[in-house]
Amino acid sequence: MLDADIWVKGNRMNRKFESGKAYIPSPTVSQAVISGSYAFISGQISYDAGTGEYVKDGIAGQTRRVLGNIQGILRDMGRTLQDIVYFDITLSSMELFGEMDRAYAEFFPFTCPPARKTVASEIWGGMDIEISAIVSMTD
Image (cartoon, rainbow, N blue to C red; front, side, top):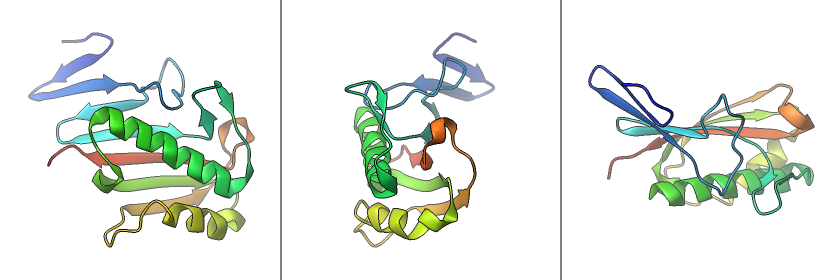
């Protein structure tokens, strides 16, 4: 079975998921895909869904905005930050790591934060941070 929002391969059904609360990368990339017990959120950048504008307000501000946007996606999925099992973070420079990490820590005061990989690379639109996530969909 194949259509725009659901596709099945063998015993696995994948479902495209979109929230109006965050950045949708492009028509060729799903904002998120739910597959089995996990959801995969595509790379999010500092985007204001209310204005439709990209916001470059320093790494701490961008980190907070991206994580806030991810929270919006999670709410629409019926999940929370505690359901995230893995983050893939790209910074424009590893020199931004310390400030990003301090802003990131504000969102994860609990004792078992998600696993995480952080690398540096060029990011679309000259942004300083992009975050992808894997979310557990089980209770």
